Length: 231
Image 1: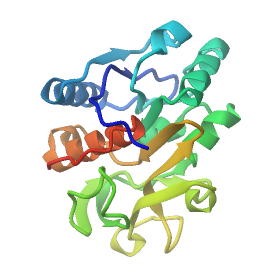
Image 2 (image 1 turned 45 degrees about the horizontal axis):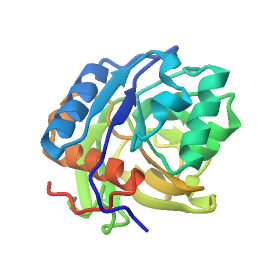
Image 3 (image 1 turned 180 degrees about the vertical axis):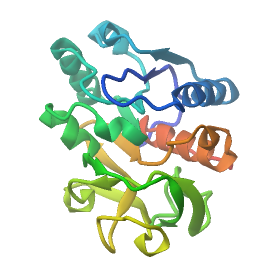
């Protein structure tokens, strides 16, 4: 059952060893502001040594915000796995899907790995599940501009995955997944939960109230704080 208290501390991790998004500072600022507005602490770090049992203990969730490449040490990987097994939450944003390609557990946690994307352009996000805290404030067709990620596999086919939103490939150029192209999904991960959104390439996304509510809803779900979120 979801917990009913408030979010506690959240770790926002933004280390990159491959492509680095210019929007990372805006994303960090948005999550800090959401913490101030909604009463939870946010620590931002790019230091892999923060991934220890002691540091992660008691945190509601860990956020990989546009991380890329190999970002954790072997000990850090083990600590993150243990925290999620103990009921911690995980949220991946945008290029979190371009992270830790050689760690099978991470691929299972996230649900799919990045394959490529066409040029940044407008598109229409189709809300498939309007009952989730990350999507219940959104219109059925959410028009916006982003990098529309393709994935190496469709996460819908994995046990426990709940697809929340897809992209209509007929509405933009260069899509590579066909009629069923998930962009946002979540899944149970043992005692913990994981949430992933492919959105969030551009700085402007992080000042958009609808996108900020999307992040907050995903974070609350991952942390098992399933309360209603106002846009």
